[in-house]
Image (cartoon, rainbow, N blue to C red; front, side):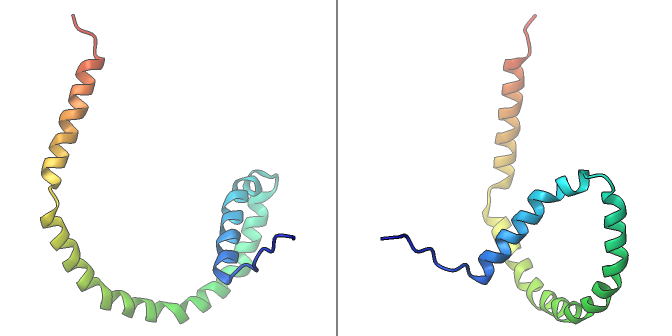
Length: 106
């Protein structure tokens, strides 16, 4: 019986596409003439993106203003509960001990 692979969902297709673009972008930019092609595409698409970004800007700004006060309160509560000072001092001591061990003695 053959193995049936389910169709990819929209999120999976997006993730695979983003991974492919980020993986092959360095090779694209190393190719000869890449700067000219990139400049040409930027000049072509930048005005359209600038025009379309206004659809998203206002709702995102409102969402951030609504969410930021509860997030700030949560961060302050968590900061008081975490022993950050002790952890930082312990890490500092560990680094110093490691450096003392690595340095040659006279």
